[in-house]
Length: 387
Ligand SMILES: O=C(O)CCC(=O)C(=O)O
Ligand SMILES: [Fe+2]
Image (cartoon, rainbow, N blue to C red; front, top):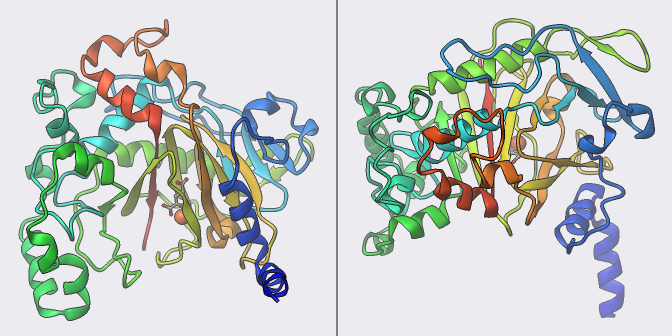
C-alpha cells in the first residue's frame, strides 16, 4: 500500500520537481556529467549537445565611474541553450576586482535600510551594514578609503518619507502588517550581528518586492548607481544581435533594445545548504526587458525549464563571476537553484593578493572576512526593469 502511494506520488511529480530532488540530493564528489558546464566548453561548443556559442557584436563596457576593469574580456564567449531560447550565459565574465567590489556591494551597501531584507519583519535593524557590525575591527567600512568600496551614503539611499510610508501602510493594512511589522513574540528576540548575517537570505533593491503579495508594493529605494551601471552595460551588450557559431546567422535575443535601467533587484545569499525552489519571475510589467544576474562565491546547479514545471529542465553550473541573462522567451521560464556546491569558491577570492592582474587587492585590508564568507556562501545579484 505504502509502496503504491509512493509510486503514485512519483508519477505525479513534474519533470522540474524530479530534477530539483535529484540535484538537491547530490553528494560530492558528484557525477555532473549531465550538467552543462560552460567552463569545460572552452570555445568548442560542438562538443556540448544543446549549447551554442554566440559571438557578441558589441563590447561589454566597464562603466566610467568604476576605477577598475569590470570584465575579463570585452567580447567574451557567450552561450545560449537550444531548448531554452533567450537564456544567455557569459561564463567568468567579471574580473576578480569586479567580483570583490560586488561582494562588498552585496554584503555592505545594499543590506542597509531602507532596502529590505528577510530579517526586517523580525528585527529592528541598525543603519550600519550587518557585515561591518559582525566584524567591528573593520575600520575601512564606513570611511571609503578605497574609491571602489565606499559605502552608499544613507542620504543618497533614503527616499524622504519612504520608511514612514512603509510603516503607515503596514499599520493600516492588515495584510502588510503581518509581513512588515515584527510580530509581538519577536520583539524580545535579540541576535548578534554575526547571527543576523548567518540568517541573511535576501535583500531587495530599488522597487521593494513583497514576497507575500508578489507585487512591488513596499515603496522604492534608490538603486545603487554603480550597480545599475554594471547591469546596464551587460543588458546593452546582450540585447544587441549576436552571431551564432554553428548557424552563422544573426540571433536576435528576443529582448527589448531600449535602454535598460535597474528598477528593482534581489540579492540572494545562499549558505551551503540553501536552495531556491523553481519559480517564474513574472511580477514585472515589462517582460520584454532582460533580467540580468551576476554570481559570486560558491558555484551552484541552476535549473532552467519551460513555461510549466512539466518541461524537462536543463541543469547548468553557475560559477563565481558568471553572468546570466533571461531574455525573450526565457523570461517566462521556470528556474531555480536546487544545489550549492561546497568547496567551489575560486582561489582568487580567498587569496586576494595572489593574482598578478589583481591590482585592487591591497585596497581591501578587510578582505579576509569577505573571503571567509564567500568560501561558504553563494551570492546572486539580479536586476529587472519593471515598466
Ligand atoms: O540565484 C540565482 O541564480 C537565481 C535567483 C533567482 O532566480 C531570483 O532571484 O529570482
Ligand atoms: Fe528568479
